[in-house]
Length: 150
Image (cartoon, rainbow, N blue to C red; front, side, top):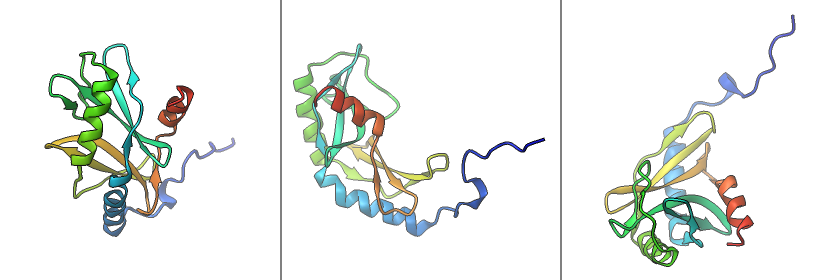
């Protein structure tokens, strides 16, 4: 009988180290001033604003017209808003946002996730390589943004 083919590195990977998490946090702090709000994506029940870095989408922020700013991660709004209002609000929120002092390691992706907050709400997740040295774009969102000519 042939053994199953492995689909990931599993136990051969180095365990996550605190130094790499600290590097990931510092990297996001350096990159945050360069993040820009892209052209809003209209969904059936809400508006998402992609956050871009050097032409790549990092994450999408949900705009919540009820609070006049980004919705917290995990709670997309259910009220439709104008794309112009969403873009203006998310652009302003990005200039007021800050990186939280912590990182979550996601083993399946072999990456860190560094949260970014605005007024106490986590509104953005930035993925960083396991060594803490490279930002990882959201490739699916980047494709969507490019398809829509944004």
